[in-house]
Length: 316
Ligand SMILES: Cc1cc2nc3c(=O)[nH]c(=O)nc-3n(C[C@H](O)[C@H](O)[C@H](O)COP(=O)(O)OP(=O)(O)OC[C@H]3O[C@@H](n4cnc5c(N)ncnc54)[C@H](O)[C@@H]3O)c2cc1C
Image (cartoon, rainbow, N blue to C red; front, top):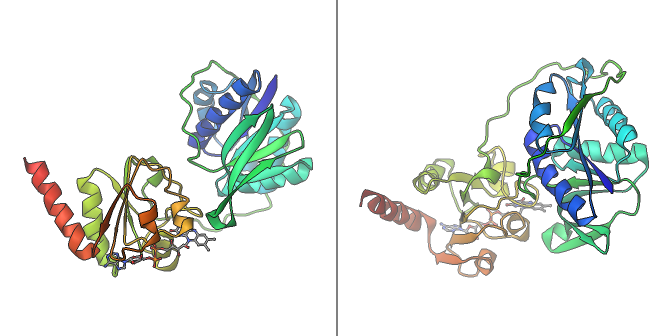
């Protein structure tokens, strides 16, 4: 019987971890899934989590209002000491990654991050992550107990298996945070690319920011959303985030890359899309190696034509 503890500060990612926890429990011959709900004013999520985990532990404290890593790890350690997990799953988002690595140092156990798949082979838990900038895949086995696995957001679907878990609150003495919040500005809200069914992605082939309107129109006609490759976000600042290995992993029903060359770091984040379409002026662009449908042409000619045709179809 294994005990699998899951932690993320985000409820949606907890549900992705619940999926993996259930899968591992069934492959490892049974066990218990535990969720750690840690933060300030977070109790409201406990009932929801108890529908997906066997046990939920709440640690709710004003000293967890700010993301003070040492307090978060102390709180999580309380749950670790209580349930003695064999496996600790942490969401591999920014905060989760920090918690996973700090926890592994405190526990002095092995930790693998950016995991996209976990398998059980001969009762061994094998993790997969991208290596060499997406050119290879690393298979890793953590030898310690517990083992910490930080799972990339979006790698697993949210759990749909419902449970009737217990909820327990733990009181932990946490020190007053040593961090003071001076100012906070909301980040420009981006669309949830990893939840969209259809994603149109703009690449460096788009010459001007205003030209994105045309691609956005195409995305909207198709009922999808507009995303971008890394240079449009990281270098040009046209979008808050990007698609790919170091950005958001997407698995939409339809991906359309427009003016995207298809470098491996980009492809690593889109290769599980059901249908891949690319529009590129260069017939030798690497993206064409991965497409189901490729259009060789100037995006400034092809996209307006596509929009016109789609509008005609809609009017029929
Ligand atoms: C560690 C690391 C992580 C990275 N992570 C990511 C990541 O997560 N996501 C990501 O996207 N990148 C990532 N990159 C960057 C990646 O290597 C590429 O540089 C990037 O994907 C290129 O973006 P692009 O295809 O938009 O631009 P380019 O490579 O410049 O390609 C532009 C394409 O547009 C085409 N084009 C030009 N004009 C037109 C036109 N008029 N009509 C049609 N096509 C046209 C060109 O033929 C070309 O193929 C990463 C790099 C590193 C080193």
